[in-house]
Image (cartoon, rainbow, N blue to C red; front, side):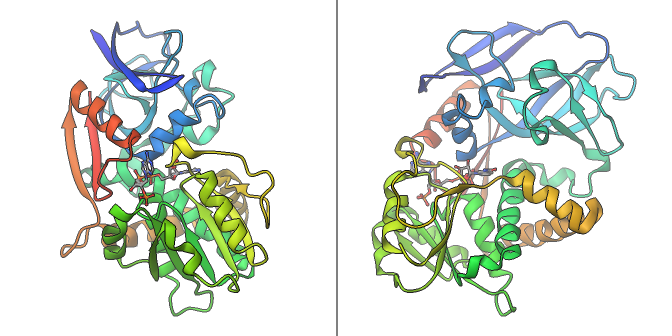
Length: 366
Ligand SMILES: NC(=O)c1ccc[n+]([C@@H]2O[C@H](COP(=O)([O-])OP(=O)(O)OC[C@H]3O[C@@H](n4cnc5c(N)ncnc54)[C@H](OP(=O)(O)O)[C@@H]3O)[C@@H](O)[C@H]2O)c1
């Protein structure tokens, strides 16, 4: 059977092509999975933009010189198994290629998860190599697969950043500024901050966004204030702030570091939605931007709370977030479900060009 896969030119992210290759034969201990749905958001575009620098191209090598496969989060079913511990028909959640199928080599199996032990993935961050077994996953429900594919990897990051900042008493700031405020990861973070309203560690959250996304972002109701990028200097420079950067825009970062030069308490780099405006942090006023490293906070909280304590807190936060996102009066997300090459290519191009509506959540299959 042919495994159709979307390839992206590594040196020109606008160039894509569908590649059909025969599915490889399974070796002993391997399983084949059918990738039945995956989400596509700016997060995946960032994987491509940092494909070389952060090894994202290495998860699913295309075998075609100069072409890469963008990893996506989604759901798959085991269609063939030569592994005694993994049955045909099992449902999995995890990191997949933009393809119809994939071959995994399960190792370190538990009832909840296993690791893909493919040699080319062994040096890559462990968090991406784990596959969650849906039958034993407390967050799984079959009717929320689309929302899970779209939001789960993003919200875990939102929650961990929030926890990291709270754990450090927001570095003495009482206002947090988020760029790309209309993005799912940013509004997940704003949601977590909003949950603290009225409490002892309450801080204000301000979102910065582009003019087209102002109304949507304000409508979410989780920001104390939403401003256009060009309005940021209307905020008082005398109030201590933390900057959490989802945009990666070098020019925006410089404006923020300059405006709050003395009162910027922490500058946290999380993303690169403005992937064509990326730049270094050299010569900036104020603190050096620090790349957020989620595994470090996970490790700390595992030690503080134990794996069960961390899972429980995350599960509680996730359920509250799901209620807000799916609220009947004004859902934050409209799932757009599509199949096939044309849909994948056009969605990818829309996201690359920043033309996707923030209210749309794209769920695709080959
Ligand atoms: N480090 C981590 O572990 C981690 C984990 C999850 C996510 N992230 C990062 O968080 C960021 C947000 O990801 P997401 O999936 O939540 O995004 P998303 O929901 O798809 O975000 C869409 C928003 O991003 C901005 N945007 C998208 N494409 C753009 C373009 N080409 N040019 C300018 N702006 C563009 C726009 O926001 P505005 O108009 O508001 O600017 C747009 O509304 C990504 O960079 C992602 O990599 C990092």
